[in-house]
Image (cartoon, rainbow, N blue to C red):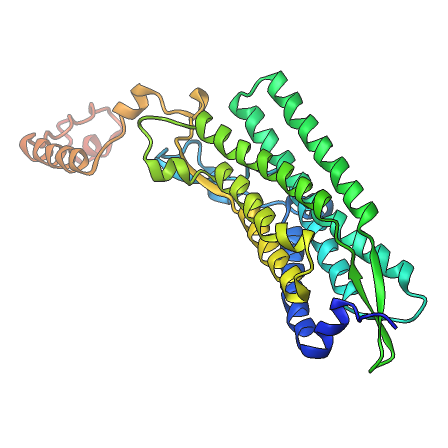
Length: 337
């Protein structure tokens, strides 16, 4: 009988590590589910819209002032897929922590590949969102092609890594069960991490160069939401670089992923606000003549006092009597008429 695998040794010495890892994976799952449900795809499918207020419909124009308007810079479909990838990864990683029977080698290999590829596709979606932002900032076509080619090359290394480093099971004699663990490949794992790290560093530097402004504060420039997103992907890559290449135990493998996934999801979900001055259409603006004829409270009081004084200064004049005619009451009473 050969030496027991590191997974079996860890379970024998620290049986509580799997419960702690399950808690953190559940945290990542709940965060992914929350981001998925709050994405715009659910509102589009359900057909829910925010009704406009009656006051906005009734008023012909509104007073326009400087205000902070929330801007959703990530397309709902991208955010939906990003959340779905990390949710699938957390489910697959949790499944790999379960016990298996002697014939569970195929299932173990499947859940290990499913979890790893789901996490890598989540990174790919995040880098695609950053590419869209860079295109909006004005990068050229050649730069875009190099970016996409680097992503495709990195994805090929990822597939090769998970084709070699598959999941396998080891017997735990004390409980007569089999535990699932992943076979690591040092060279391919480090190559994949290096390629993704380079493109994330490039995205941070390129975004900083395109958003630089002398009139902008340094903290605002460095804290741009596009820079934060690229930096969150870099943090996730640095957290998972060593666990993907070497065996670091259950906690060392799943805690860094869970923390990094939550950071990425919350960073990409965050909606930035920007001060915007809305423009009123010309047809809805009040004319200058109408604006000049709008009475104020002071002018209304002055005009009331003027009318009252004029009314008192004019004497009362009795209207002239009607012409007397033979059949009037006055003629019948006065015989002289």
